Length: 316
Image 1 (cartoon, rainbow, N blue to C red):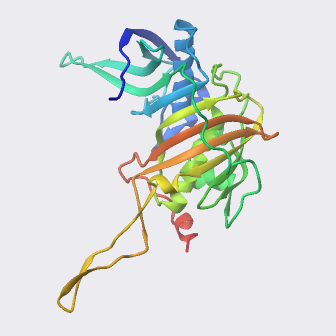
Image 2 (image 1 turned 90 degrees about the vertical axis):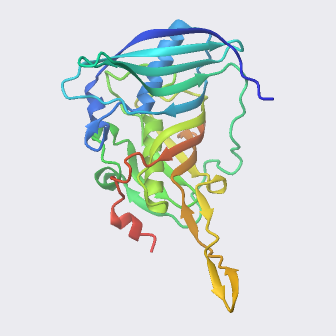
Image 3 (image 1 turned 60 degrees about the vertical axis):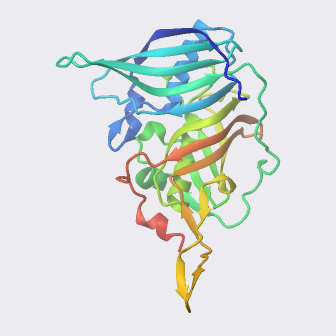
């Protein structure tokens, strides 16, 4: 029987989000939204202040449920960090906002991002086949300016893939910079920009090989071995989990043949809605800084946002 630890305490802490100018460069369908990586920073800082014993080196069971929109003219957003503590010392932290309808006197609570912290020892994903080395196999180079003009149309503050992005069916390799923003949030998780840029690279992979524009919606585990730092350069490897459900073999259709039904098996692949990746972020000395396992990415636009035809045609 699966063990579920008992809740020992629960608290809702006020969380004032300062709207820094660079946040307006992070957009979805033309509207500014708080990046998931920024939300994790806010939750980690708030949780550490309340629970100094919470281990920030491993984040578990992240869920990015709803966008937190940033409106023109916003200087601050009033939010809350809802912390739940368990008997085994695990902690969950949830970014929520509360709105009240003036007409109907209805209070609505929205959960935007949820993450967990654990003191239990966690195993890193297997790195044996993903050590820093030259990209093998057939790959496709996409210049960073093309990425941010056509594929990930964010503003300049988030143009943090540099040079060419190397994309193949089995992995994607990105050169990344963690920019210096004097007003960027300080956090025990390190700079938020390298992981965000790695998500951009995964989004590009999804457009090329799955035909969807996918945004991150969560992950299983994030290991922070050496917090990334502003002003430094990094290398990210993004590996699609092809063997665990990104693609599914179609078995075809039943066909009537000389009086008997026969199953036609087509050796083709069907694209699923959720893409799953593992991500490794290294410094330029090949020292592992972060490992993120089971990153889930999905088309959250209900099909309104589509890849440009040129990247789809490049598979021909």
